[in-house]
Every structure is written in structure tokens, then in C-alpha cells.
Length: 114
Length: 112
Figure 1 (cartoon, helix red, strand yellow):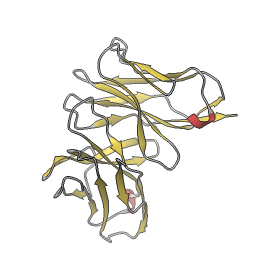
Figure 2 (tube, chains in turn yellow, red; figure 1 turned 45 degrees about the vertical axis):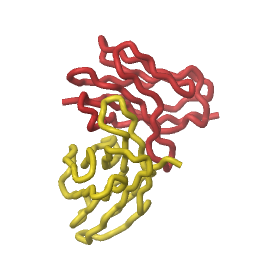
Figure 3 (cartoon, rainbow over the protein chains, first blue to last red; figure 1 turned 135 degrees about the horizontal axis):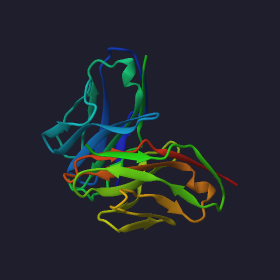
Figure 4 (tube, each protein chain N blue to C red; figure 1 turned 60 degrees about the horizontal axis):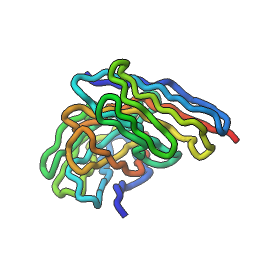
């Protein structure tokens, strides 16, 4: 089954404790992206990757890191999480860059930073 | 820059009522337009899309027409069902296609 998976689905952590949210897709997609969803703000892009070893900042990259060492994986790293990073995070992928291409979303990771 | 504005929710309708969710956009060039749906506890799924002016996207009884003259992409359905209860997001894709700009989402609740 074609899908985007994220782990963990739920995470409660404390300020400053490094964490990684994994994202994996099995569709051989070139393009991957991370979004955060906050009430009243919709979805905002954090980082994206056009292919292996090619990443770039989205609209809200501060406090996050990403890497793309393999085509299927695109982990999101919070080196020193803070409470304002409490949010619902979605990973997405699409076959290639292109304005008409559908993005496929993972199920989401709900992160709480205390 | 690009932006999407959609009507605030929540929207509450009775089953079989007519649905309209308004969406307008600001963009340079010729963006593609999308409606995504998020059911409770799930990620977003593409509902429909349109890639050029006057295109009509349709799926599962939902429709939206790309109106360049009014920069709009309103979502409509003639008869909603309880199972349509979800959050609906309007989005646009820039010419480069690297990012989707989302509206803030409209929550729809359909009651029996």
C-alpha cells in the first residue's frame, strides 16, 4: 500500500531534550516536506527536500533541522525543543516538483513540549 | 507572496443541505488550486484540484471551479452527508511547485 508513515504519532517531551520525528514514504517520491498545523493558522511549511541531499527552508524553519540521506526518509530534528514547538506535524511527499502534483500526507505527529 | 483566504468555520449543516466553502487566493503567475480534506485524527487527503483557469475539479460529489477573474476556487456540494464532516483546506501551488500555501481550514459538521 502506498503510504507516508510517521513515528511517533504522539510525543510528550521536556524543553531542551533533543528529539527526532521520522518520516518514510514507499512511493519513490522525489519531493518531501514537513508542515506544522496550529489552530487558526492552518498548515505552514517548515522544510522541504527536492531529492537526496537537497533541502531548503520553508516558511517557519527556526528551531528545526532536516536531512535527506535516502530518498524514502526525511526526518525532522528538534535539537532543543521549546514549548512554542508544541504542534501537530505532518510529513508529505510527491512524485516530483511541479505545480499540479498531489502531495500525499502522513497521519501526523502530535508533539507536546512542556 | 502567495496566500489563500478561506471562510472561517465552523460550518454546521443538516444532512442533504447544500454546501459552499469560499476560497480566494493571491498569487503571481498561474498557480494550481487544490482542496484537501482532513478527517478526524487523520492526515490530509487530496479532494480535488484544478490546474488552469475555468477548469472544474470534482470528486465524491464535491466541485470547485478555478475562476481567474475573481481569483476564487469555491468548494460546493449539492447534498452533504454526515460522513462529510471534516476540516477542508484550500491550497495553491506556486509555479515552482515546491510548496503548497494553505488556507486556515474550515471545519464542517453535518448533523443527521
